[in-house]
Length: 335
Image (cartoon, rainbow, N blue to C red; front, side, top):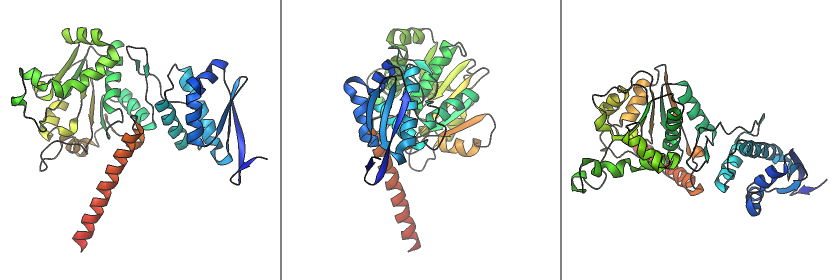
């Protein structure tokens, strides 16, 4: 019996077609090399199967991983290096039993035909919350897909004719450069603040279709201040960067929602640009509305980050620093 560092090596063999085996291994075996590095295993192609030789303690993870990768392939998802890394992490967290390979169903495809789907457990909970509630708050750090998934769900609802229009809004909070000193009219001045929303929709819908929808007012991308006095029926509303709202602005935004509408409120409470003495409207809303039925609250964490691996490490480092600073302050107060 083969061993490594005193632990037994076992083989996990998962049935797959020849094409699926090629996709799991990736171009020039790039996926295989990455998986072998992350799991300290050895992958080999078999006729009608993928074989993974791995430590006995990692058997469940390897089994879970290959099932998830094959499920992604069968649903038409691409397997980039980032996707493989996320899938390895998911398999490591959920190797205790009953892996179903699920990465969540496709929400919509981009203009290039690339499917968009929730990649982590937290993101799957986020999508499910939106599907089952008319209003959803999603709070989490940078890179967790809060805004991009909201855009994808909005476009999906528009394409399915579940809603008649999309309304995207952000609070305009000056951070460093005053609006009055920027060139152009008021829309030119606020455009840089709204540009990330434009970019996300451009990526999902394509430039021509996005512009046509803007011209028809099927899609509106507007500053939060422009929402006052409106009632938005039959609309998919996304309030982004909500940590920069005041409590008054938040109340105004939430009460714009009309019949047949859905609303998603996203924000990162660690990145507020409000004055230090002013409470974020997002934090206030979570405290006031937490017990109301019909509203879902989703909290994503660093484990749900789907950007470059360094982003996850950066967020974790800042979180550790906050904890350390809090501990130091408590020690000083006790001293």
